[in-house]
Figure 1: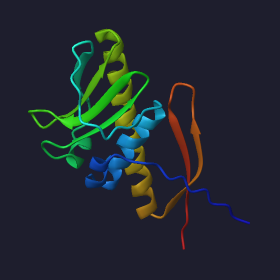
Figure 2: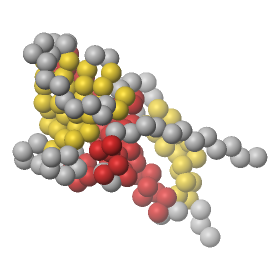
Figure 3: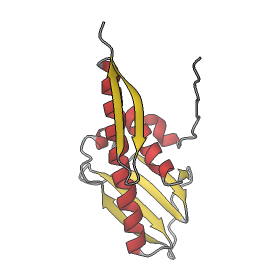
Length: 154
C-alpha cells in the first residue's frame, strides 16, 4: 500500500516567474525560518534597521532571477527580500526593528539555507534524471542533509 502526502504552499506572485528550482529553494529557505510570503509593497519605516547581504556561493542560484525582480517574505518582526543587486549577484535584504547585528544574523542564516535548498533541489532532480531514487533522507541537528539513494538497473 502506498501513501502520498501533498502539501500546498502559498507563494508570492513574483515566485511564479522564477525557475522551478529557484522558486523551490527560496520558498523552502524562507519557510524553514517560519517566514510567510509577503505580497505587500516595501514600506520604509524610519524606525526599522536594514541590512543588504550578498549571498555567497550563489552564482548558479542567481540564474533564476532577473534584474528588478524580487521576492519577499515576512515574519518574526522582519521582512526578507531576495533580489539581484547592481552587479547581478543574488542578494538578501532584511528589514526590521532588531539591531543590525541581529538582522545580519538572520540574513546570513537564510542565505546559507537558500544555497543549501538550491543545491538539494538540483541534486535530487539530477538524480531522478539518472534513474536514482531517494530511499532515505536525514536532516541532522546542524542542518546537514544526508540522502541515501538507490539506482535501478534494468
